[in-house]
Image 1 (cartoon, rainbow, N blue to C red):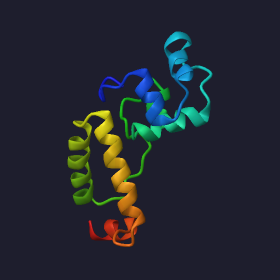
Image 2: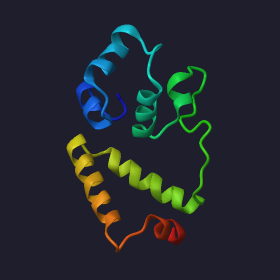
Image 3: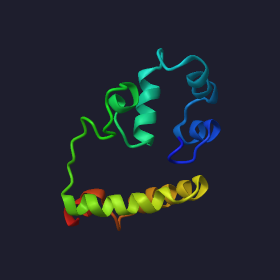
Amino acid sequence: MKEQNLNKHTLSHVCGIPYTTIDAFYKKGYENIKLSTIKKLAQYFNTTIDYLMREEVEDRCYGKENPYNSQYNEKAQEVLALYLQLDIEDRAEIRGEMKHMLKSEKYSIQEELKNA
């Protein structure tokens, strides 16, 4: 949350997790966290459940397979770095636009991956 300058309320909103659940992490710890909740957090933060739950895991990509070639990965990292500089509202707008574009016939995720 610190890296992305998020507060508990914003994290709740963007992940679809009740605020009370996130607030409870701070008050009671995450020992009894639901798998569905940790999956949402891992997906939002683009990391693995192991990274979030196991203190000894320091690599946020631990256990992830990288299906992309290195050239595509470099481009993705550059875009992600720019995206992370945006505020929460602008990030939400970008995600909405991307979803809209991907629904159109002009773009296909599979085609984009082939051309990367």
